[in-house]
Image (cartoon, rainbow, N blue to C red; front, top):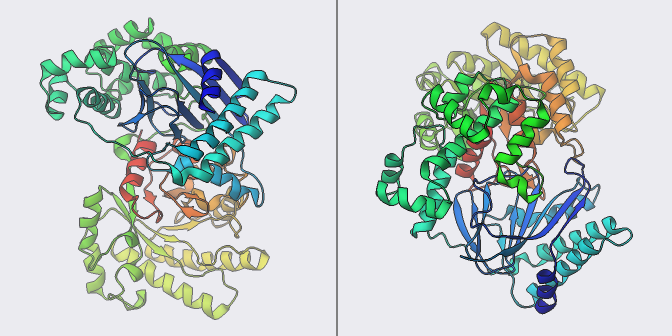
Length: 594
């Protein structure tokens, strides 16, 4: 099998497209050669999925700053939003590889779960598969059939290509537990240290980066760094730093209304004269001239500046260029990242600031009952001393959670729930909480009677909120009495209260068939409710189980939401995948903080 496929690959170079990147079902296959050591100057990411098949023993990928060596027939799975860069280690000659970019809509019914299984390799912590023996033979057979169909393009080839591609994914997902790949995170070699430095520049370009400071940070001499950097990266340290900064300046100039003086500061340039000089040298236009171009000319310059356009793959930079419904007004240093109190073992209120400081959080969603059950059996029994313990913390973004069933049709139960919320509102006022978040238990119920119960409960809650001057957030949820942005807007307009706002949980708003997990749906959500959102809670899932943020069905959605935001509100990391807390917080900073 290897010999047959080797012969086919050696004799062919081709590209096959099925549909356009903007279509719901899209497939792109490129069998080609590369001669440059680094295929692209910068790490980049895509809005869709990418598969890279190594056809040489001297290839590698840099993923989120980690150097991952690859050998022939290794396959790397790059989910949307994952920073990566291909690297070819051979000193001379051409190296071949296979790149596949794709997207397809969620399937309906029982096929939905099966389709998700095809994407499981993309959720691996180290997303590389290495097969041997029969598993390798099976994968290569699927791959050869796929490539033959892509090259021949016989009658009905699009259907054949999609079917064979799905079988290729299915073959890998069935055998992924047989992968023998073990990541090597060796970073002490000279070249790999330079890769780490390049990633540092890419991540911290807005800071005052100098060659001397960077050399000290990575424990090398300035002389060593200045001489080795161009040997590995193909250009000087300063040239690379300027290229990274200009790439971000291009995005701001093309897709935002930021003032040029603000762009200069946010991209790390020390002065307008330096920015203008570097920009003119790189683009052959002044920043003002570039901003005045029509859209298609701006895009042409960006694609030319970013070498990825030479790959003939869907452009991944700027990643959110097509989202233009709203303009973001908040900056990276205004981001308030929050955590859920139930993710931590705390014994006293004094633990709250310690926990928040340990993870760099600025907000907390706090369930007092469950986090500190010894304090009170119900909020009505909290003493002044109990409340003073929370008030003395001085936390600005403390959100108190209540999950009482305010939609129940049982009047006694609803009366008890409302009494508890009344007591919680008093607590929130005394301790100066940011807001109360109401996420009713058993919310996935709908119908006129439940809707009436909810409106009646909210009316009562708002009377208490007015008395104590406390803000209330209500969370919507698909399949409930608040299933979509229209019903939520209707509720807000009905009560017209300055104390009523929305707790936005994107995952909770996704229908079972996920057909509303689209840019247009969330665009409409923000066009209706943008100014009413008081906090956002982020969770992600795959195969109906929690996964790290950006690794499940919300991978494409979260970056879109980041672009739609028009004001700064606390962004809470919802309870989810165990062990991914720090990775999730880093994801929030990266996705929503720029």
